[in-house]
Image 1 (cartoon, rainbow, N blue to C red):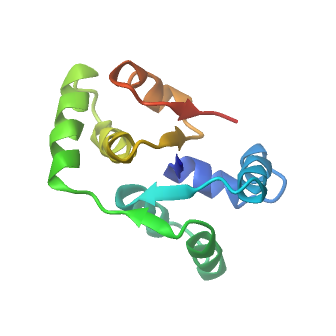
Image 2: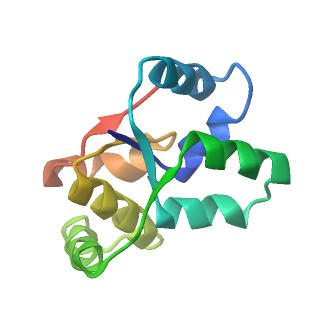
Length: 125
């Protein structure tokens, strides 16, 4: 399974972007796609057109809730990665992916590379 982070999903909606092409490849290959409820909320904050929301909802139907276990892991990741301002949401997204055993597709490698040491598998375009 591959979880999409917000940046990847936004970029994938741009026709013929690297992310769009990669997403199409995964869909054609039958790869399971998911997204954390945290990333989904970020995406919905927009700006985003209603037709993009409808399209994204069809593409990524597995929207994984953020649970207490994720909160605990997020805090550990945040502390392990140096308490970087603005990085808690990234840690929450990573924690959800780690809990369900998913790789994370992101357009912001720098935001997540520091979490690879905790077991996060990153898929880059």
